[in-house]
Length: 436
Image (cartoon, rainbow, N blue to C red; front, side):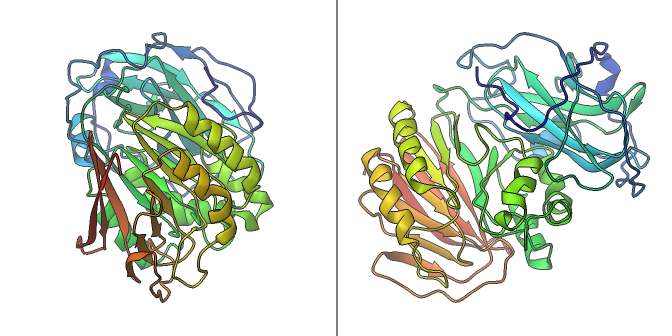
């Protein structure tokens, strides 16, 4: 199995074994307070180990409470587990968030202002203990003053199943339980739902308005097509304009992101790779979610290298749905226009392997193309960055300069994409068949 935690990130190799979680950790009686502002530096580093079951087969039957077509709203996870509220005295500079969720595993990350042992306690909704995992400390390539990054990898989980987690240290709980749902197995015949957005990380009222509507939508994962943290992707900008804004959602739903050009302003996008725990080399990667194969690319890096990688990756998947996302758009009628080098390098690969949908950003508008040799391209760059004018081209089906995100539902034979504004208006809807 490919390691869940990305290589080359300066992991401290020490591991701690902690006691099994007590059943009492299922009690959500902790006060609902905000995060502490006392960000002191931490000198002690610790590692992590797992106490719990061994990995299950990704296609194993889900647990009893995994429904064929489950409620995948955040409200449902809160009802099952809790809202993940932080104790006011908890030494947390970044609230916990879930990453790299698969059918049998997940990663929980957080930022702390204290050293020493810290752990994730995993339970089922009714409170049954599952495992306790001690954290691993990451030495960030570009550290944020006063904050230490921690990660805990949870393995041996069941597909399409709700799990609850809380952070703790010694006898002290740092958080009320929050929850996440693992990805469905390959053969689960149910509708999949996710949201996608781009060019968001301004910290302004427009970004927050888009987020408030986005968090109400049914979603199992979040796709971000880049320019996550304006204007230069520094650690502080990630903290204030990403995690401070999206924390109420990220503690429940994993975000799979790609770097945009603004992330590359700082240290070759190192703070982006510090902030997330993404698959592969964290620049380009792929993963499966039920019947969908997702591939992520980095259009700030070598396109020829990635085209060859993508060709092999798409050839190897058996998923009937293929969705690819990256930052610079091959087709756009906006301010930057079409990235013709991206189109030249990638479009033949996308077409050859029957990719149904490509999600991009960079231009600050919404645009959907007519199918281009079977591939529908969407520019979703309106999640918080200043909107810009957009025209129309021969390839354009819809083009609107409007704040938005997109919500996608994938069933056996059809994908439905909706562009939704902060008022909840779906101003564009399209059905895309699995086979053109």
